[in-house]
Length: 436
Ligand code: GDP
Ligand code: MG
Image (tube, rainbow, N blue to C red; front, side, top):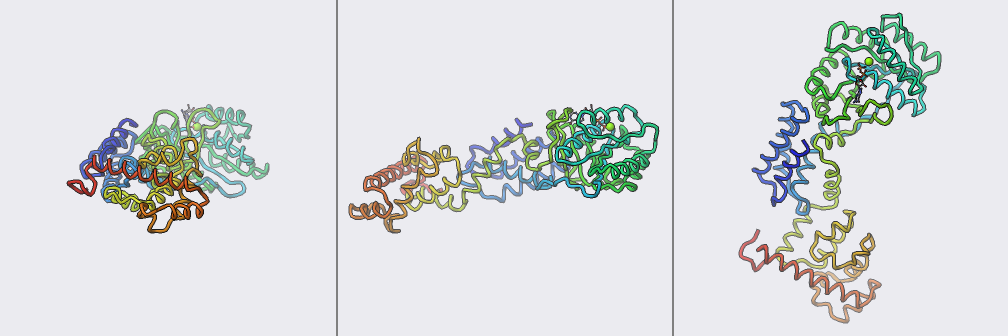
């Protein structure tokens, strides 16, 4: 899948701007990628249509490649669709009661154990309740988890009524001063009426603060249908996505969120108890679905720092050979905002000569900035008028030496020459035959 998106984005890289044609191709690739990640077909289509509109309606930053910009549009869209912000898990009540629902094998019991451990680590007094009355093995399983995590487990092996067990467990929790009760329930292999009635009854009786629906992310499209049915009957509060430790891309998260409009609260990433339960972060999941790694952060950094209009204005000036010391100053400021100076300095031709490689840090440009600040507006736009008398004044004003001022002016002239050369080569200069 990651390959597919790579290819999709590569369609855009190297292209000067986002055009109708390469957007169409890329959108098609992205749709394929989403389908591969188990996003429902209809939803994938809706999403990609929206992405296309946005991409065509947006202007491309001169300094950032269109491919990265596109990636950002896609990942923003997916993040939004999955709720944007993280939804914290904060059940209330004394004790706070959490009900766990889902199909058999979805990972309810495992999740109950993990959540118990997590809450215990947060200093809560936790009680786990075994309400799977059909499989004695399920009770054993929860008891084992309780032993492994040091969390108390409430069981009634002879009782076949989950409503009663749950009620008794909550009474026991109150008596023993527990702050959290997690009720694990039975699940069938497919949604069936008896099971639904049973869990509905449990919910009505114990009135949990949170009902969490657990779903196996590997079941793909079925996961969406199951979520829908459970939500219609139980009106659950949040979703837990399990088994995201394989190469499952997590497209189910997107579909489920869109279909049931309930937040995903946790993801479970393995059979081990420790460090395999995470709160759900929509932005991270968007990256997982698209297999993008850190690209997004990079793009965002660049975008924050790069004022689009400024970049366009600069581009025009460069093409007309009108780049002056004001522009140099604003470039330095942009570059400083972007953080990683070493990488970024290479973006402006000639800039690397202004500072020594070993000195590249926040202070590297300080003398350069000071010198330019000490110049009059006229001197900044037409540095050729700077004679020896002016140089002395500028050096004094900026706390530098005439030699440093000379140095800067020399470098700046060279920079301009380089730019002229580039312009001539690309046919963009004032003397060139065609304008952009
Ligand atoms: P339940 O029937 O809903 O209670 O599901 P279980 O908790 O018994 O889990 C069913 C199977 O899935 C067990 O073999 C678990 O070890 C496994 N399982 C549960 N959660 C995860 C997970 O996040 N990752 C992986 N790889 N396996 C899981
Ligand atoms: Mg179970």
